[in-house]
Amino acid sequence: MSYEVSIFIMDISNSSKENIGNELSEYLQQLKISIADWTQNIVVTKISHRAGDELAVVCSGYASAYTLAFYISHIWKFTDHKPYFGLSFGDIQEDLSIINIETWIHPLMKQARNANDYLKEQQNRLLFRFALPDFSGEKGFTVFSKQFETLINTSLTLKQEQMNEQTEIQSLVCSLYLMLGQQNKVSQYLERTTATISHHMKQGKTQVILHAFYDIVKVLDSLDTQDKHRLTDQLQTNIRQNVLNHLHDYFPKERRL
Image (cartoon, rainbow, N blue to C red; front, side, top):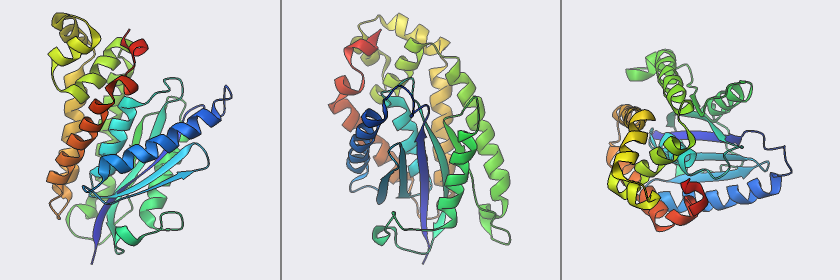
């Protein structure tokens, strides 16, 4: 029997600078706990905190890892030490629930590592990159895995350009809108007028960026033959609810500009 999974390997930019290693390591330990809470009873998830500044996650469903990575990037605390994610997805023959991620060896994990290593070497680093195995001779979408890899990475590159053009307040508004879902709630939290929030959303291309994320998730879900799209919806709902329960911790007063 095959199991559909997705993977990310996350690393942190400039983690060796400014004597911040211990603080980052503690933050990743907290994030590991948060991911377990976000995914509990929704998707099977294995998490490993490695080498101080690296997090490896394997979870059921083609879209789950990218969904987690996207939300992590929007609640990330250290603006001068941003995370970046090498991603992959596909099928495995083992039941994920019994896998020991610390010793697990699989081509999908290697591809996620390759994607992470590619980002590591880039001067203008993207947040996300997918790398997929070459499924020559397979049926379905997998026969075009490398073409799909090119298309999805092109989409991610274009989205990154739009995110890079955001000002600090536009980025904050985008993240809060992702969590809160309504302009008036963002307005209330930031103590700004709805017109001001609407302006920042328009100038920061919030809707374009978030729709691109939702579209990528929908495409990944559509490839999943085990009908995981409802689980992805539940996963996003659970992440938002967990963040909202601690909103002042994720977006403290000093971040409200």
